[in-house]
Image 1 (tube, rainbow, N blue to C red):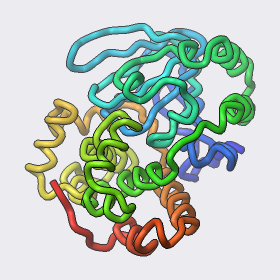
Image 2 (image 1 turned 60 degrees about the vertical axis):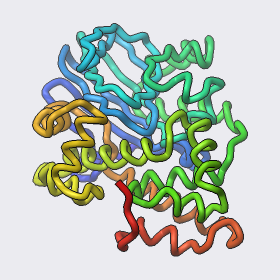
Image 3 (image 1 turned 90 degrees about the vertical axis):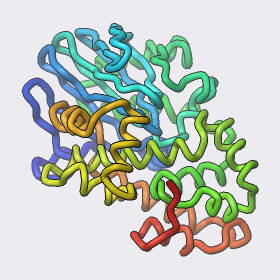
Length: 323
């Protein structure tokens, strides 16, 4: 069921042109999908700015097409009815050209691989037509979503579509390590590898071959995304306080990383987050932590030193950090 109570964290978000609703996936998809979203767009105008990220978005559009601009290369592109975004290194501005409807699937970090025959290395930093991944079924899904009367109907159709693709084999232990790093990006990567019983070199090789980026780069982007999420969801917080909360050592560390990862100044970063709509899910971190805690409770004691050891940094306790 969709959650649309006017004062709840998942209530529809109003802007000049748009109404946004979110809902959760069914339990079978919860380890892979963060949420589904329905954006009703009443006219031309700006949509979210997509910063370098850790997850993936699958978008189904009906009505006027969407366009995307790469902030740094100035490349301008019209998007197809169904497309996939797996952005790691670019800053992309989405925009509507007229009245339209956007149905969005937000994949948890690393989980798109369970639904895609293509690797992350092939998909990252590209805008991929969904039909190139899933053939005619993607076009059929787009048609079904266009006819869906509301978000609950979209949820049912998307859930059936995605559930039919499961399972694809994967290394569950590696996913668990990615989850820990996503929620606690300042954790020492060497400690994470050692806790799983792997050498640092083996962990880095496995991580990069599976997810398309190194664990260090993933952690840097996850930390930057924590700042963006807080700025989007908490109007009273500042970039400086949000950066410190996310694990940056000081303002200069944040400014340096922001420039290296996104090529933006602090003012540009804040404007891009706060002056445009956003896709951030207000309850995503809490739900992710609950899922991870549940996973850690099912891991045998021989696989990890201590469940409490891995939950400690996620609960705000002091841990070793690395730049």
